[in-house]
Every structure is written in structure tokens, then in C-alpha cells.
Length: 84
Ligand SMILES: [Zn+2]
Image (tube, rainbow, N blue to C red):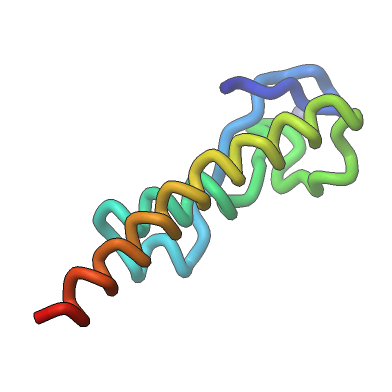
């Protein structure tokens, strides 16, 4: 999903966070997608509160859609491990 910069109207990309880079792999990508900072090529790092409410709601939904399956998967794995 592409967002528009609230300052200049340019395309916004998600920047890597240190945590995502360290975690790596699938979980790293997930953290990156969920918690990566938003960056504009011209304006640099952008705060979520700078975006219109509609865009922020969409970001929250996307985060939930990523985090919930990950949590379910994690619980599933823990249940499988604890059974053995
Ligand atoms: Zn910008």
C-alpha cells in the first residue's frame, strides 16, 4: 500500500528499523512492515500523526492484519512444542 507524503505529496516508503534488521527473516519482515518508520524521499522521516485520519486508520488495520496471524502462529507453535 502506497501512502502520499502529507507535506509534499510525494510517495512515502517504509524505512528499516534497527529491530527489523536484527531480527531478520520472516519475523523481521513482519516487524518491519508493522513498525517500520515512514519516510519521504524529500522530507525524510514522517510521524504517523502527520497523515490524515483515514490513512492512519488504514495503517492500523494493516498492522493488525500482520500482527494477529503472527500471534496466532506463535501460539500454535507453542502449543505444538508443549505437547511433545
Ligand atoms: Zn515529502
